[in-house]
Image 1 (cartoon, rainbow, N blue to C red):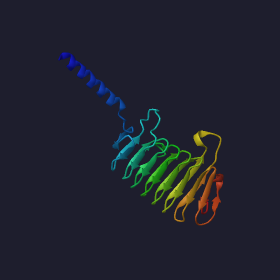
Image 2: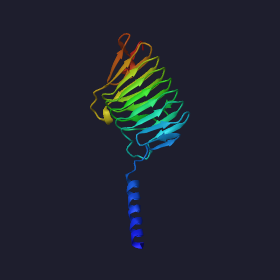
Image 3: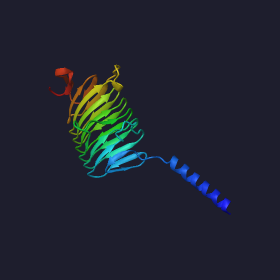
Image 4: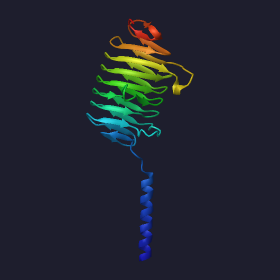
Amino acid sequence: MRVVFAFSMVVSLALGAAACSSATKPIPCSGACSCTDTACTCQSGGTCTFGDGGGATPPSNVSISCSSKNICSGSCSTNCDFSCDGQSTCGSADGGLISVGTNSTVSCAGTSACNLLAGAGSTLDCKGGSDCTLELESGATANCTGNSVCDVTCKPADGGSSDAGCALTCDGSSTCSCAGNCDLTCQHGNPTTCDGGVRRCGSC
């Protein structure tokens, strides 16, 4: 009986260890965060920092939401779905840019403020009276609509020398400028080239 009991205990411990080792960790986040292994939400009125800040690779294939008067910072990697809404502040000049990786999707809406760096192939929507300062790597595109303000800088991907440029489309109600190798489309008239090569929809 003792041998059987001991064997059962060993099997149980082994199975428990296997279950723990195979568990998937939630997305690293500090502050008022509610996270799973694929999605993270900053609670209403909360401040959240995504990623561990320790130099580890940011999570990829995840969705992150700051949707109600949040203050958010941090980063995610490839195929990230990032939403900033409801009068939130996502990234700042003092606290650093929110950074999303290649082929990501970003929405900045609801009179929010977004200070953000997006990797190559990403798509960004700045809408609903939001204020967006964006650094876009080659192949990234942005749309500025609904009385929003967009200040875009195009830059080579990963700091390299090859620069295919980025694109910004601006509707008639928004205020847009674009620096670098930028394809700027103004829905009500042609863009104007100003000092330093910055292009604007409207006068300089």
